[in-house]
Amino acid sequence: MSSTPNPRAMRWVSSTYSDGQGGQCVQWAPDHARATGEFLVRDSKAPAGPALAFDGDGWGDFVSALKRGELSG
Image (cartoon, rainbow, N blue to C red; front, top):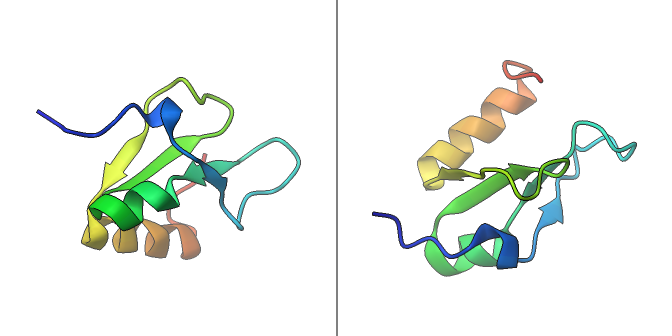
């Protein structure tokens, strides 16, 4: 069972890699990451939808894969 708080109640920040045009916008919860070590990511177009949760290693792998263009929408 996860002890993750309600993701909708957190401060979410848009990724600097987001396109700024309302599409392909990924948000993350930096305050939550600093406090818990758990990195939450969501689609800004679906804020009430699910969030992905990563530990530190998983977050690094996810970001690296995005930078290499291995993941796309």
